[in-house]
Length: 347
Image 1 (spheres, rainbow, N blue to C red):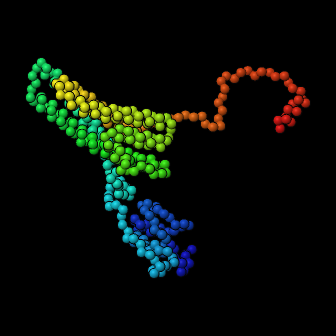
Image 2 (cartoon, rainbow, N blue to C red):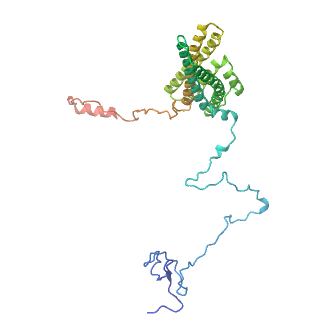
């Protein structure tokens, strides 16, 4: 039986081997010979060249209703937020990272590095003073080489001058860090810091007032943060320990200045040992300063995150089973009228 005239049989062409396949009840997808992709059904008059019998039409992504140009506002020129790059991980930059940062934030970013450098230089100064004191003890009965004296003097001067310069920079940057930390805490609490930046900077660096006011500022930060009562208690205890060591360090500096007015030989020798003690206490104060800063940032002294202990609580609605079940005691049987009256009362 032949196909009716005017009606041609449709077939599909393989895009890989250009083989024609007649269309059955439904069009196929893959070529039975080479497993290539079968094109859409076409007429038998089409040449078997393996070309696709469709074309792409590009249409603009505009709404169907045309808006008159007079009422259309000017749009900004398209641009990249950052320079596009090529790589395995092409992550766009955070636009918040490129926002302008004030001087307080810039100085506060270097606070911990300068505090660590100050602690190292103060430790070196303590070692230099102890080394000089050992030379003095050795010099009581023996002569000392001029090279040894030159090395000792150079080490002492380098450690003292370096600790003075870096310590002053650390004092300024830690004050800026404290101001930034107060801003973050007050912002999280939904308010603003009532103290001015200039007043806090001035009171944190004055010779006598700086013993009291930084501790007051830190105590306000710890109390405002809230959180768990145990954490607040630990942070307050750490701040108070730092406060005591900081006050002792400043007091020892005053004692060292007053001791320098004594001109006797024994007083100068004792002054070398006193300078070693002052430098050692100052180094401990710097280490405690770093510990307080990282504690308020949620880190340990080494810089790792503070581990929170797991607290196990009893879920609501659960009942604990009692320990050994006691044997049931036999109760006297109640009469039928008493049971009915009890049931009525309960209902």
